[in-house]
Image (cartoon, rainbow, N blue to C red):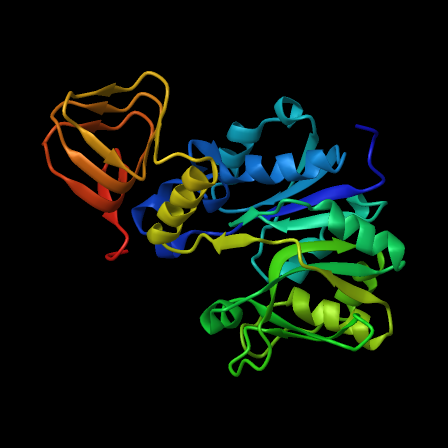
Length: 315
């Protein structure tokens, strides 16, 4: 693929505080989705667009991310790591990258798992309308999903009229999904972005609204078929089950596993080197690499770590 005129940015500085002990030992952006770190899926999305230059913003346990991704050569990209020393919101994180970006860039939030069949639609929309920004959107059926993200209101001509961060009252089910294509005008907007009263942060949606208010064209692309923000243990399980089924599978067993005869696996992923010494039934489980199960206990809706099982309904 020819070299892209676009750069890539992944924001991966978040702390998985609501994932219990799992989040204390592993940053969400490298959580294993069917034995592949979440960020690797995002790098693959970028590479399909020809993007080779990627900036990754790291923070909490950032060294774990650099250990997993290295310099990016394994994935056909060059990775530049930038540390976000203070967690002051998404706009603040993006603003730190201005000196590293000389071209329009694809921005992905590093704790969201996407199923995006044609990400190129964002580029086509961007170029066809000479846009300053294109927002990936999804028509939602779940009001709560919109409340956790942001809603997008359109004008009749297809341009964005307003974006509303975590709306309390939802009048529009078009949800912004954490994928953005920006030109460099976004940095002017970020410099004009005030801290919010709600979270005392610099919100990226406020920066986008400033673009809109200054009459820079902001458009949308309905590219997201399925998405999940990894917030709780159950979200990791849901991502793995979704990815299994997307591949026509119900089970994935990693390399070097030893599984006792009579074991039943349903919608379950075993990481590399997992040992199951006694026959058990595991349903909707994610077993991390190197774990040894030797007590014969059946498990359902759990992520199994070396320290023990974390259940979706208890974390």
